[in-house]
Image (cartoon, rainbow, N blue to C red):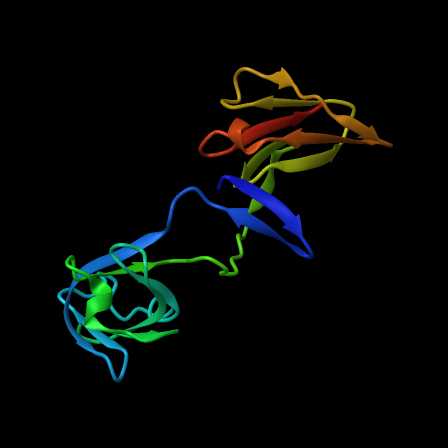
Length: 177
């Protein structure tokens, strides 16, 4: 994402690239029903949760609709008229995972596990603040080289901010002193 700006109880996310999902040549258009038959169908087929409310466009990104994936390479487009001419000389249908104005939710995960007295393993996919009972906390990527973490005391607790970029694959070790 290029920017995240708080708004109300959520945020506005500005992205730098689209969420390409699918592209196929258009074989036929039923203008009266808004149905488009394509040469291909999505590789995941009719999987639950992956059949409705895609953003659809032509190749030139000048026409947009919402699309439901039907069997046999057929797509139901809605949100405006659909004509064969909409697909231009490329005659391509594109599906996107999201589009302008969509609401998204990004789940995050943090797990802190005590592996022995005073030693913890942190796994996370977001920045996190860890508060542990102690006077100092050391961190290590390999459990060999330890570095004192900067933290904020809160009574007997020490709160240490940890950035996602500092958590190696597999997790980060924390040791309380």
